[in-house]
Image 1 (cartoon, rainbow, N blue to C red):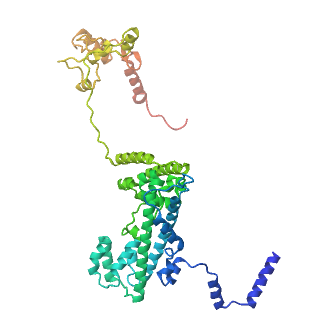
Image 2: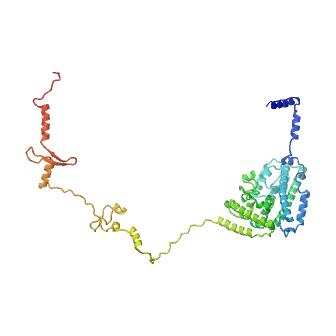
Image 3: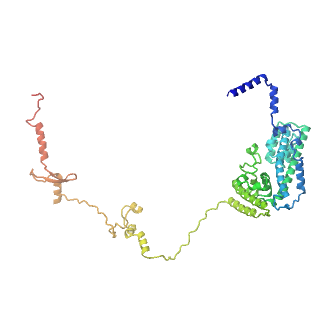
Length: 494
């Protein structure tokens, strides 16, 4: 720690002795800057030749000459080995794919240079027209004109109608200025350079596509020669393409959406995880809801086709498109079924009844099995109903809550019903009626005080009652209080 503090003190002393001036700060910071960024290079570049240099290189020029001299009809194999990898045409194809990638970058640089030069005249044009070649064609039509109404017909032949309307509105309300002759010369040179780059790119694509059917016939049959050439160029060859899994192959060459495309004014489709394979005929032919699913299936089949072609080329066998033809036919049938509407439910008719009785197995065991589930006589009687007879409530009969003919004794029901007890009303003038009246009144009718009667009660059963005893108890109680000998006793203590 002491050594660290000593070093810090030495640094502070040096700073005090040699203070840095503001001019030295700017000089030191500028000396430490790295290679300028592409945007800075475009700003500092004076001509298009300083920006785009690929077309003037010796390697590109010699490659174009070798392509022009090579036969376009057949694919030439090397004499020493029958492998496609050692063929000179295969080397030209790989080199062409590399130059195609470089030409894409050159086209982007030329497009940025053109936007930088034409921005003072029409700054809104780069946001309206996103495509690079369409932007160059639109600049050639618009040029340095102030009135855009006579140019509408020329713009309609290049751009969609909605884009032309946006250009007309932005041009009438824009704040651009007229370009000078020197600026117009740079704009014209940039447009010509973009046309040259596009022409060279088309030439290389045609060369690669003409040889693709021999190198990768299965892939070409499945997705087309143009898409196969682009994918092989990005992968770096057929062998490297065969090692790429299908999940990565379906996003191969995916482009990021610009702000204009997100707003709905661009030509880019808003499809996530959609690469070059999505541009093939198989994926483009299905409905929008099935495109993502079709892309996964086509990418999986394309990986298998690339591996078949790679095995054929490495072993020296002549490639054929039998595998690709079979896979394409399978995919076309599958994708066609996906787009078919759902079949409606069909009403099936009942089978024809068989009027003849079938021969069934009999025997003791079968008879016992039938007897277990057979209806007994009691069930049969309970299920029967008699006509012209009212048995109980109608609701009980309708709901099946009665016993049917089982409990009807008149008809011969086997179930004995419960008979209700009927109360017999006795005649009061008869002998039994008088006897019952004497019992209910509590007396036997005799003048004798010793007479008693028996009463049956619900709580105590048999009870002997003396009718005169209750009267005598009441009379004795009254004598104690209201008799001749009764009176009020003194409260005075004796």
